[in-house]
Length: 286
Image (tube, rainbow, N blue to C red):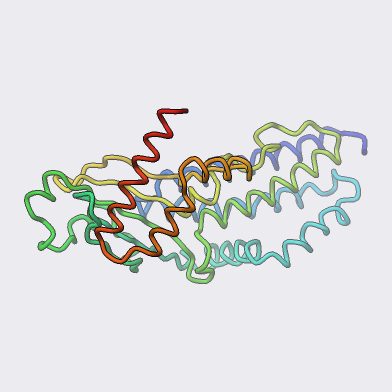
């Protein structure tokens, strides 16, 4: 552990401050997910600011004993990380050529009954297509009185970079943030400085894969007013013992086999009605 000087502490504080700015810009982008101009602006600021975390660190390397060897371990790992390489390339694109090539995918579903409603596939949309514009583009054949009065338009949106199409942008940037948190924690530990809770815990829980990849907004079919958002798809984590107990209680294995053997729609309906009776009885006996 090295002797802590004023310049060393100042360097550490500067890195932490910039990292927390990255975090705030990520959250700004998340809040603007359905407002394309605001989203693009916040994402691009997040990308360029994330790169300055390392710039600040390198500018203060004279205050950190053994900097080159320590920092070289991280840069070597990042060079093999496709997402970290993507972030560096995106930052260079933004600064040297302007906006990087973002792409939005949208799926829209009309919910107006217990049965499935009209649904699109994931389709490319104009980068700046707002939820209101998508609402106004709905085919007239769907706008019947019942749908207008009681229906909801579910719009699911997903943002990607065309250079890295398999990963949603916010999830990619959360990965970048994780790596910089790891580096910052290593730095503070090396210097013998306290790690702030906001850094020690890494990304906030709301930054999980599900939130980034499963975003939707609900609009009233009557006036396009927002009825709510969907951010998370929570997955129930059960122990193997709990899974066996629930399978036995609700006779899940029997249901699967019966559905496989069902010949008609009536057979399927009777199986589900029977499962409902089993579930209600099980609840009464808990």
